[in-house]
Amino acid sequence: MKILIIGNGGRECALANSLMLSKQVTRIYLNESNPGVYDPHQEQGFLQVLEGKYSARFKVLGIPWRKKEELLLAAQREQIDLVIVGPEAPLADGLADYFLKKDIKIIGPTRKAAKLESSKSFAKKFMKKYEIPTADWKAFSTKDRDKALEYAKSLKYPVAIKANGLCAGKGVMLCSNTKSVSAALDKLFVKEEFGAAGKTAIVEEGLSGDEISFIGLFDGETYVGFPPATDYKRLKDNDKGPNTGGMGCVAPSPYATTEVKQDFEENILARFIEGCRSEKLDYCGFIYFGCIKTDEGLKVLEFNVRMGDPEAQAVLPLLKSDLVRLFDLCLKRRLVRARPGWSSEHTCTVILASEKYPRGKSKPQQIFGLEKIPLLNERLQKESEEQDETVLKMHPFRMPPVSIFLAGATVDEETAKKHKALGHRTLLAVGGRVLAVTARVSKLSAARKLAYDAAGNIKFNGMQYRTDIGKKR
Ligand code: AMP
Ligand code: GLY
Image 1 (cartoon, rainbow, N blue to C red):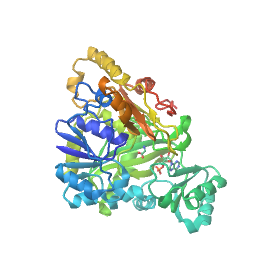
Image 2 (tube, helix red, strand yellow):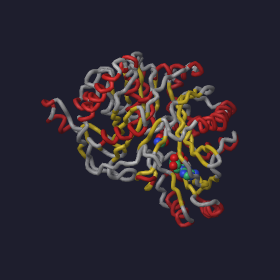
Image 3 (cartoon, helix red, strand yellow):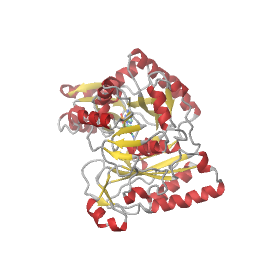
Image 4 (tube, rainbow, N blue to C red):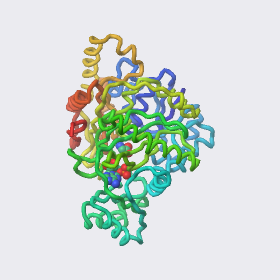
């Protein structure tokens, strides 16, 4: 089976590496480059990434998703069997509709269903109609700035001001007084920092509590949940600093108790499925419920029509079954038959981000120390094999104990040429979230320790990361 993944961030790197473990996959394609994709079944493992010895089972098309026609031609030429869309923007733009019309199978909802993420007012109306618990809110356009301010004053602080459209997780501003609400509205309406996405503002009651990302595959009838995860959204330790796409993640979420999972299934999931049926939302793909555990029970902060990033990097290493089989059942609308196996271990994912993240561009910087990760894995694997020789044989879909998923990283062509004789090359951090380090061990505290020990080997100028991912609060 040939699979094309759209997107080239950390989430897509995790999807690709996970799919590489499937014997059904003959080739993985990425529409754009990510140097971190490798074949974990090959002896060299992650060293392939550093040595540039790409697996024959991996190919980059080099076509941005916006060039839909070109992408379609390439998909037809390469006889792609399945397309998986990683990020939200192509889905909001109707990429799934486009491929479906040409009879190409795709994991990712249609444009209409993607509005659950691409329009916060659409999502909020949906939640209201189907009685899905969420924060009180109202939407305001530019001309209603004063009304927006008045409404914010009627709520208890903090108040969340959100851009209605897509902003890569960065369009939410939590305000603790009228002055900051006013400044946030100015960012949307006057400075237009979020462009068209900010033409409508959502003014929302601020909620507090632990956050849980419930993510799974949904075929329109059946939802197959992956282990719930907790993402750390703020840039700095102790949830300080601006919101980001996510600075780290743990799975399964320590906050997803049996009671919380039941609350999710009864009061959110069941109503969501009912809503999708009634609205005739044609769905085949990932759905992500961004939830917060309040004193009044679980509430939905947002729907996303894709996997999370870095949730994918934390959750996929726990999968013990063939991901291709899950996608296949989803496409056939037979998820009801799916019984994926999940490891009982814990993962902790730490994001190493560039200096200016989440705003502004950072200068490219050489990444040091990645070559130490395969050695670390070798040692850990030896130790675990000594304990239980059958571990690896029993889990053919297993990733190594420490996984690196690259995102804002690229190959330095200059040093690549220079080092060719030596057989290794340099990776450059080029901005945003550069890479994710995921550790998978039996206990969360040990996963946290291993993730930070592994991350301690990696360095680049301006590197930012949180030191409290997975820490008990
Ligand atoms: P959203 O894009 O709406 O999910 O928001 C991104 C992040 O902003 C969430 O994961 C929360 O951390 C925070 N957030 C969003 N809405 C609220 C709210 N009403 N109250 C408190 N925090 C919020
Ligand atoms: N990590 C949050 C998101 O992917 O939206």
